[in-house]
Image (cartoon, rainbow, N blue to C red; front, side, top):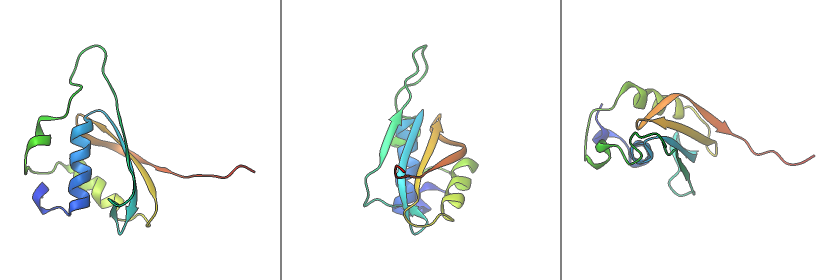
Length: 108
């Protein structure tokens, strides 16, 4: 599967991961995809001992073949209910082997 075949919300998520490179993207779900109408948050991890702290080279490409990590992430996200807050961690612009579901709780 290529990036150009993705919906706008899923393409946005892949591009955000490439821009962050190392760090995370936190967002809400709507219809099995990131909700682009709600605020999102990015956190970039800065490597002090060298390494690439900028966006991935692929971030500037209009299209490329998705990696298995991208495809698995999008398949898992598709199963989440609307309003779920998700934090996806990225390394080298790729999603990790898991993601976090963030839940708010009121004080007792």
